[in-house]
Image (cartoon, rainbow, N blue to C red; front, side, top):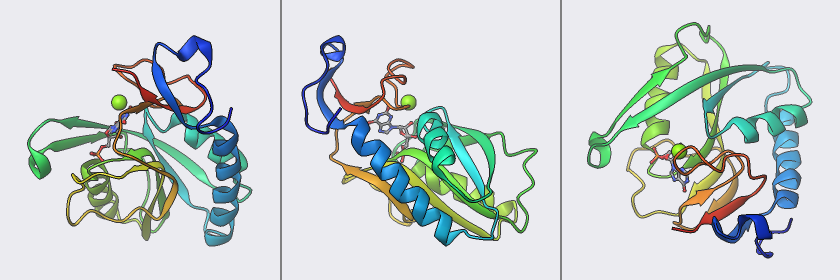
Length: 185
Ligand code: XMP
Ligand code: MG
């Protein structure tokens, strides 16, 4: 499955275009895992997987990552507000022991950056020694909030379109599609 190739027949009602094909995703995951293995050598990082969207990316990345690492899983729910007044509630950090640890947040997509800035604040409160982020996708959006932490590792930058597949959903559906495509409204 190649980027820009035809949408397979069974997904043609759902997607207009393949944005990132599965071959490209696996190749990029291998590259990023090699970079992380070098950057985090000897540090036993904790990967904080942001559910549900990052589940597939995190699974593939973790399998490709040759250095010892731990995994924790959190949920981040946003409640709409306007711009930076939106509130994000984070569940799942209650039992994680992060003081003094090197922490890497694994996200599906960074859009405005609101979710990520709330997660970073919580991780710093938890006493993490370092906090960085790896995202499958970064959206090229004019709505990116100011004072949002920059994403340290990005697999793919995409245009400002609503996408599904490889973990990402529309109304909880289509997470299982093994590549990323533009959702047909
Ligand atoms: P913020 O604006 O906080 O948004 O950076 C991050 C969250 O918004 C969701 N999101 C999407 N989900 N397709 C999706 O399935 C998209 O194109 C998309 N854009 C944003 C997602 O939950 C992400 O964690
Ligand atoms: Mg979603």
